[in-house]
Image 1 (spheres, rainbow, N blue to C red):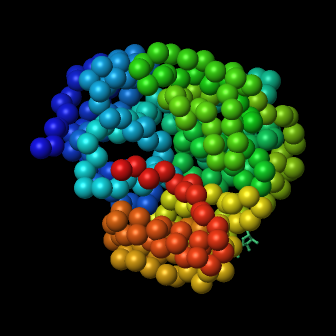
Image 2 (image 1 turned 180 degrees about the vertical axis):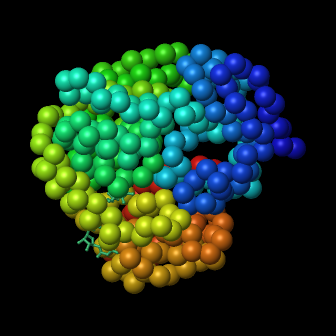
Length: 296
Ligand code: EPU
């Protein structure tokens, strides 16, 4: 029988039982979680992590929900989010931007460009929040968010605070060691530039998005690019654009996106992922690796 978790009643921690996860992810699918916990300050967060660790609760950290799909009948555990107190982005002289992890990527980009700081333009159009971007080392066209880090603060899963500086963590294409902790804050180091150069770069990155499905429910790119190739190109060449299972469809605009076209379920998404993988393997001998995080 399912064991439902009860509110640990921690100051600085909001608790919502039986939380429908479909509303927490951009794909708009998913089961109900035993609970959603929203941390509003560091003490509440640390106390929650210690309790969850001691009780052996399953905890899934969730940022903006733009790269995660929850699967299965029920999430037997707690989904953890950071509250609006962690959503601030601010300019610090001479060339730093400070961000709470829950700050939307758009707020980070805007704060940097308003201060005439260059280096974060590639983040334009990347969905989600700063914490999720750091966990997955979000980036495009050879630029990655982890390379901008001066230092981050956060907590280990058992509630101990940590400060990690540039050079003290590993990262690569869609991979970051910062995913092993809960980052709450990041300081980014950028470079002074002029407004028009920054604007030109922002527009370039924004135009990339026009080749991707916008304003529809998706989780961005589903698969990582295999070395030297593009997952989107391979899926397209396999003739899968527009292919659908249930309410889930391979985007007709960019084949590495699955869109929730018509009340898809997480099972539809998973079946479509399996079908894409099998077809691309069969046609090109390439094993596509997931970029999106499937939580079972
Ligand atoms: N292509 C096709 N058909 C498609 C999609 C792409 O033939 O349906 C071809 C394009 O014509 C191009 C090549 O594949 O020749 C590469 O496509 P694109 O420039 O769109 O880049 P991508 O490799 O598919 C990557 C990132 C995106 C990021 C773009 C732009 C990954 C998995 N994807 O896509 O990131 O926005 O570059 O820089 O690394 C994401 O991670 O969620 C994401 C959207």
